[in-house]
Amino acid sequence: MATYKKRGAKKSVTKSDVSEHQTDSTTAEVFETLDTTASKAEEFVAKYQNVILIVISVVTVGVLGSLGYQSLVVEPNSREAVGELNQAQYYFNLAVNGQDNDSLYARSIRGGEGKYGFDDIIENYSGTPAADLASFSAGMAYLNMKDYNAAIEYLKDFSSDDILLSALAKGAIGDAYAQLDQSDQALNYYTQAIKASENAYTSPKYLFKAGLLSSSLDKNSQALSYFKRIKNDYPTSEEASQVEIQIGRLENIN
Image (cartoon, rainbow, N blue to C red):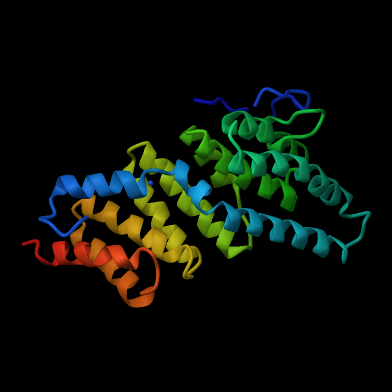
């Protein structure tokens, strides 16, 4: 498991080291589904990498655009931070699409080839939009590196007006807690992710995970409501094809 640098630590820009067939549904099957669907957090970024990277890129461009309307005397730090973010984000993008993933993720966090990593941007440009984006990307990097406590720390530090990124961050925190077997916390963050942005992309995914977790916690009425919402509100989603058997199972529980 990777280790991570605490806030305020010395800058390290020179380091280069860095996935039911309709049978009787039992509790065991619920946990098996939970394990393969909700708890494989490391597959999230790989599966939805293009959307995540596009959203990050759009937000970065938006930051640059908004700065064009502000005084360069007031905002030079923010402009500089966005410039520094590009190289760290480049390493992150390579990791998502590459083979030597852990090393590239680590480099995106710690920096390399004389360039800032996410940690350096967070430390040196605190309060800027770029630092917020760095917290998000660093959290997702740690999630992929299976350092779930670090992922939670960084993602909790992230805040943004972008509702899709906010939903993804909350959901990723839920994934990290699920990997740590902290189901109540995971469920809490999945519900936060659902509330953060109601859309056909993230909502059915987190509704499904919330439904599975609720069921595993014997919160069957709550689980049923999540699955029915997918069926009614997101009938064309991938998750909708999987909810009928879950609904049938829960409706037949005494």
